[in-house]
Each structure stands twice: as structure tokens, then as C-alpha cells.
Image 1 (cartoon, rainbow, N blue to C red):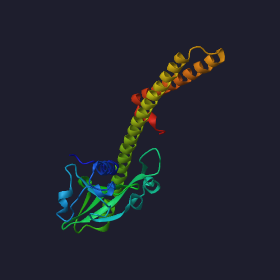
Image 2 (image 1 turned 60 degrees about the vertical axis):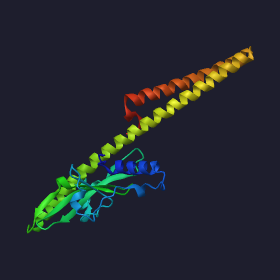
Image 3 (image 1 turned 90 degrees about the vertical axis):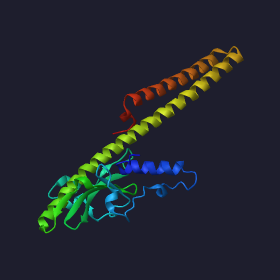
Image 4 (image 1 turned 135 degrees about the vertical axis):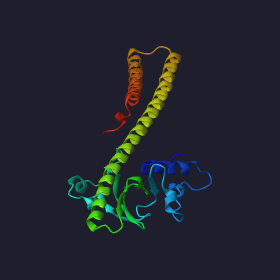
Length: 239
């Protein structure tokens, strides 16, 4: 099985595993990926060069968010993260993890979300500084990793917002179809009662006619919702 590459996707998988597991509680925290850092940490590197961890400082030292390595870039100083969905509550942020090795030091771009546990380390694109290098090279590498973390966080958030929009569109379509079925049942039941009752006064006939028209108009509205969501899932969200 290919592991999800974003923290949001991993959270969704944790929750699904918890919901599907009939022999334990439904707390998603009990179904995280089991990264065995007690063994050689290299075994945790995926084929695409990502390392998925439970915390930012699981591997190496987390030096801080990108705003602490701005290198004169205003956008790093002013950005606190990228929203993940239409509620605008949680953001994906990033920073730098420093990993000291025998012959060099790695400055690894890292991303995480404020809404759930977990972090993604972009090991394959880490900045490498050879042993014995001066502080300026270390500072420059850390700054470059911060810039990369910013870009990765922005991309992860775009993916998360797209996933959210798709899910909202699917939910809207399901709700619209349920509403259509309910309207069909109600309208058919009303028409059956009308036929069974026989004749009515003109005023009652007009009231019943108006009621049927309202139900059919609502039915058309639900079909319009389905058509819009199927044409573009972005129509389900405000952004």
C-alpha cells in the first residue's frame, strides 16, 4: 500500500482504520503509522524521499518555523500558514529540521498541520552542509530549507483544499439525491390521497396544486445542485 504523502491524508487514513477496526476503540490516535525509529532511521525514508513522523522533532532538532529563517523575504515573515479547508480554522505550516551526521549536517524542510498530529520531512531535498563549514553556510542552508518548506506547505494545502472541495461536492450530491427521493415519495403520496379523496372545492384544489408545484420546484433545485457539483467540485466551496 502506498502511504499518503500529506498529513491530512494520513489523518483520514487513521480515522478510517479506527472506524473499520471492530476490536479496539475508535480513537484514531491508536491507528497511526508505526515508524520504528528505534531501528536505523534510514528505514523510515520512503521511495519518494519523504519521512513521515508523529512529531516535528522525532528525527533531529526542529529549529523553528519558516518565519525564523526569512533571509530578508517578506512573504516568509508575514505568512503563518495555508488554510486546509473551507472552515479556515487549520493551517499547514513548515519549518526546518536539523539532522547532525558524522560528516555533514542536513537541514530538512518540514511541514505540519495545526489541526492534527504528524509531520512530513522532505529528506530527499534537504540542504547538506559538509563538516567544518562556517556558520554562514549553515545559516544559508537553513534559510533555503525554510523557503522550500514554505513551497511544500503551500502545495500540501492546495491538495488538502481540493480534497475538501471534492468531499463537500460528494456530500452535497448525496444529500440532494436523498432529498429528491424524499420529495418523490411525498409527492406521490399526496397525489394518491387526492385521487382517493375525489373532488375538492376550487380553493382546496388551488392549494394542493401550489403544494405540488413547490415540491417539484424543490426537486428541480436539487437536480441543479447535482449538475453543478458534477460539473465542478469547486462549486461546493466558497473559495
